[in-house]
Length: 194
Length: 379
Image (cartoon, rainbow over all chains, first blue to last red):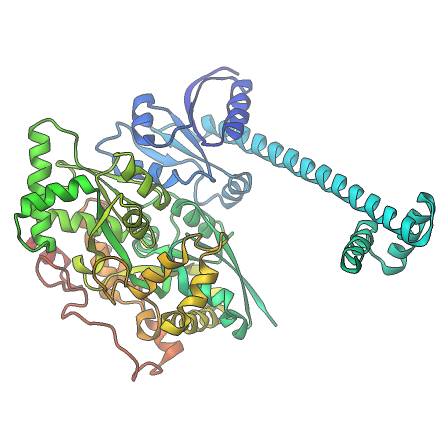
């Protein structure tokens, strides 16, 4: 689907902006424009005269955009928030993804639904990616702690690596805790006793 | 049993009553666990309140009315059963504009009427000479900041739509914008006026209470349907906030409060700046009414205040709907629940200032909440 709608993406974070822009272009929107510098936000909006404005909820400049509702004399076309207040599920989905959109002019909702849908799914995908990255980092941290705890046990009790790991695992099972937590206690105790 | 409440707030000193209620055990005493969520924009607060993500929020007083009257996108009927803070804003101007105003004043006392007239002469001269248009920042279209600025300027004879530019900026960007010369001045809450003054980038020209002596600045807001379904929770919340506001208003507790409130997950500002706002003793002259937290009767919502805020929406063209929903606006600030909760508990305590019309604006006729049209006609 090709769309001639002019979409302005207001997003200070370049990574988030790039993800949104790519998503929208892949969805067939040719006229997507990024407003990254929010200092002169209103001027940028007047200059580009978009049909739809997409803004991240992390942007403090969102209230500046709200001024557009108050300035019907200045803005040529009416502006409305895209998600209707009666549609709580849609509001929640947008909030969860961290995005909001404004529709300029009397555009039909159906025409822009796909735009917000793209933004929401892209932001959600990014959140998932960040989550996985976070988890990978945690896993790495845990492995490091377990290695240190093994080393401490090997030195203190004259065990080999295999035996040290078994001791950690057995204790974790008995205590109904994660191996990493037991390892953390060992490391902490060793530091206290040093 | 503990009830959980999710509360949104914007990092400003006038959120102190809600923050202290959470951090100093006042909520706990009422069997409440408040989860505080720091927000970056008032639009976000409004949306999360309407979507039910927040149960309650620290909100701009005029926004509670605007939302109830459906004047913004994403509006829902709200109730403001408790006043978190009265006053607390100030008008700051750049050093350059201050010099120009002083030159215009030519030795006259810098009272609001005199400075407003000076500003009018400056704005019109700039316009005539094709200089840069005078630009002022405020934090939201529906805010006391916007109304204080416009009220002050209009008293000096300015047409606030034609003679200068008013822009909305996030509080955090105010000082930066002043430094960059993008605005000549702004009206904002604490601690931002102090931050500008401290860095020598701005000069506090007027405290908000010099424009209007007593003005409801921030309220505790909840969706009407939530408030009805959770009245018991709301009542305990009001008691907790009342106790917290009383605690935070006492000088011996300022150090402890400022220590906690300055944290990154709270107001994230210098301790001294927060203390300056709480004590009203920052800058050239001490002003004990600079910021008044909602302790005692100061927490009681006032229909006259709602009516005045509504009158400003009419005056500045934010309300187009007819017939006039003045009574609907007043019902947002209904004191019925407050009076039921606190009864005569504060009869012997400190009472609000009570200017003769309940507001004490520096210009214009006395205000009567039943006669908004006559008031505006005479303004």
